[in-house]
Image (cartoon, rainbow, N blue to C red; front, top):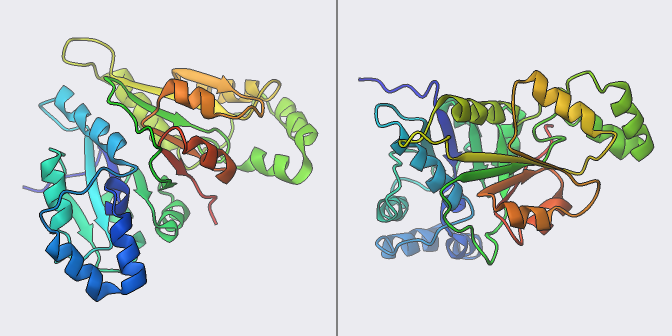
Length: 300
């Protein structure tokens, strides 16, 4: 019987994003494919440590236990490994009890041609070219940073935090700020306060998460265990357009922080997201020291 990925939250994640394969990546880069291959075969039964995207994937897969009659989330491993060198990845998946059965193993080739084939809602990787290709093709994607020293503790809630411009919303207003300065940006937002912002690369993901929140409950009848936050550099008067845009999309974000240029790290450390998505390298660098972080590239 054919299995459809339609109407599911489908997460594609590279093996390096799910597990810590930095030692193996260094072997590949410095000593070549043959040595890498031998290393993976020799360590086939050595369990890999969790990587930058592990906590988010584990938390999202837990949602399937809330609806035993049908799945809500599907995770696909998307790896540049060949099938020959991938058994260590699958052994690690089994060890951690992750409900993952699908994979694309492309033997060193680019993953980008296969992203649409799996109907991905989100793609997470440590390969910048694959992430850029995903964004260019209309798939929400992020380049993950190394795990912080204080990794995410397990929480009953799934928590995901987003930047606004160039992530949830398009980069239209961000470009005005970058090219013309803060005064032009604020005037533009005043003039367009009642006009919803165009969608950004993560808008559809946010809509999907909002749908899950509004249409499912936990087994004991409590609200769906997912909490979202918007952490944006905007402040008054640029806040109004954001609020009206989310209202027009019929989305209620649980927590919203208009930072007005204040560093986001302290707020993120308090919110404790499984993942924070931002487009600015500087913001991502700071955030990655306290929470798992993914940088969203601009569409080219």
